[in-house]
Length: 229
Image (cartoon, rainbow, N blue to C red; front, top):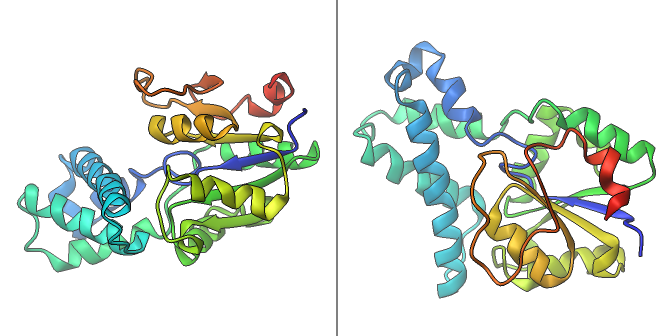
């Protein structure tokens, strides 16, 4: 069946998760990060994701805002920067308004013009997602911001992907799911979605039972090849 819905992961796919550390490092308040912002961003992202998986496994749910704070606190301590509450506050504030990747606005506009329904399916809380899309100026291009808070468990749990079918009453093969996270791409593929893995970092394919349908380095050409799925 032809694709009718294009569902995007948010963080790392539409929004640059390194953007908060990069922006902080360019300010006087974030001078301590000037040489180390990339390392902090990598630690922060890794711990943020690790905590979602651990909480899903143990059933000890906390929302993504809390998980994001916890990941940052671990990272700041690991880098010897945990004694600067102003830096912590600045980083968390900047995370609310992460920049979209440069190709994202035009890509969404083209998909909408072609008649595809575009939405986000994310670990983020509703408020986090609302802040991010508004800041990036893409809120008018998205039909829905689907948050895992409605089911209380993180991706790649099947209950999360079920949210798309519940919202749109679609068959999985009518959906193109787009993620920059290899584990998310594998989970969505196993669910039955067509999957585009946006492999921005040039990483190997994860050794999981299910693989993405297609891999690209960014989202620039998605409107041109979506009909090939």
